[in-house]
Length: 268
Image (cartoon, rainbow, N blue to C red; front, top):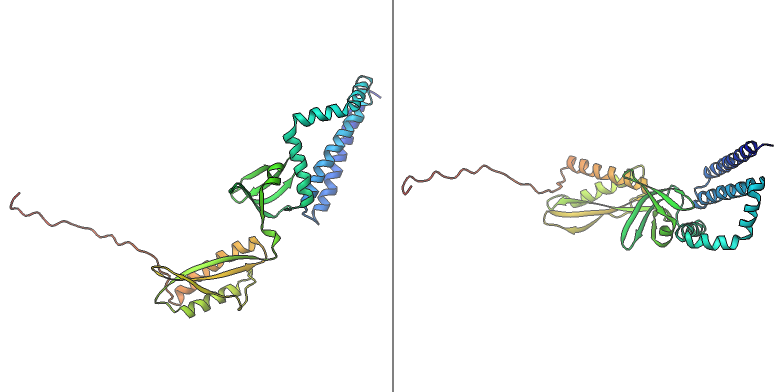
């Protein structure tokens, strides 16, 4: 068999093997969003490539002896490679640690903090041997090395069963507070995405120079529902309070034209 034929066969085998691995993990991913699946897929692809290229080298006299020497000198090569690629290997080891501990999974919303600074916030979309891909809500994609993810503080809202978010609104001192509280509670209970019941409290949480602040917690099943529900409820509160004559105070500035009196002719 010719040189080109052997190379072609091995290339086909590599491509086919990687394709089959991708199909298998794509099928598994439909049933599970576990982060270790993405990392495992990347690791298997690398192992397949290494084995295939080594097997290909064994097929030719020119590369056969070289591959044997490299294999026999594996300890030395590994030591040199480890020293030369400490950061890359650190990312791989951190990726293994993340896959085992599973602080987050694919399509979960996380916030990555390091030293009090938010490095990334968004949805986890992929985990490779080297990095984690996070799609942010502004359309940007953060590519964060696994070593950073392993050492950073990761806030994962999906670890809680339900999500609670505060909603506040201010009403004037002359408004009917009890009526406003009843309207606010009813709006929160009736929204299709909330888990609120009549037992959820609406409280007067404080005073300002303009009025009283009403406050409650909106409970939803997940963070996406929370964003939408809180937005809808804020809009509904403004609309319903306006219909019922409940004042929402706001500061105004009155601008008037000032015309100075004409100067007296005397003394000019």
